[in-house]
Image (tube, rainbow, N blue to C red; front, side, top):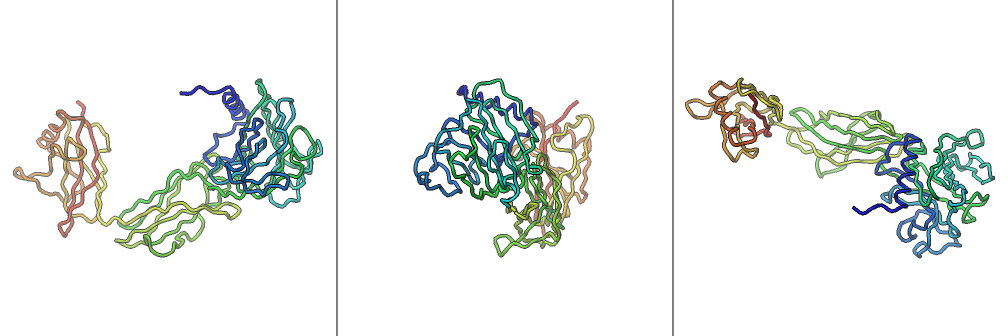
Length: 415
């Protein structure tokens, strides 16, 4: 592994202190971050796609420009917004603070003036970062900025690069950050004379979706989804169409209320009973924010199971006593008769034993439960010789003579 540079270790140390002192959660893949870059490491304008129109006193965006700036990004996945200082970088080595003001309510009217006289009209949030990784967050309250969180100074050398997760600071998702302006060095004028400002047009997912799946039985298709976190989420709607045909239609009459939050997720289920046998459906999940924005997830597919066998007991991986003949149980739909197959191979291409048997030939049972006799248990146990355990499955047959085979499960033996 390549050893980390002194700068990388410094950044990691400062990030750790912010996490400890503020109690921030680890940012997700869509975390929004503000970075103070005092070493020209931001790259070039043509390395990203800014959403702000360049100023007359700046080169064209396609040109190579040294970036000494403060910038906001969501890891480059959905957008990138930066301010070009085009003069000197923030001089973080002299104890000067870097001030970044952010407009979150989009009205451009309410706001505060900083103590050093910065024009912050319309901006409700202030982040200050000084030379030794002290970070302060301010909210505009009653016309003045009031501190709401702060780190202590780090006992390290000059900060060269430093990041703060905006979502953890309570500023919200990237879509709620419309405008910001940047000052450095304690001056009373914006760094590039005329503040760059513009819409940060990215609209990332409002939730972190961990899974979205469809399961089915003979009567309904159950949709199950789980979130890791939910930012300003109002709730969910579900949409359905017949696979690869037509438009999606909403199947939820009312919004499914959100149960997760910024630092935790939740699990949800919905039973779709208005489905037809033999039809494959596609589903999409829509999350809706408190301000009406939405994101779609999927599609996934589901189809009614008109024939199935679900194995109930013993559980997969269970250890059975060699002394006691066990009972095997399953749940089936659309099938009339059953056999149990045992094998020393998960693919059932090795030794196989089929029960029940009559006069040395396999026969069928109509019950969905079967207890082995002592003689049958001795035969099944013999499959464990030279193998790691025994696999079992159930084969069912319907009224038309068509067969259906369940999944395979495994069990081991003990004395």
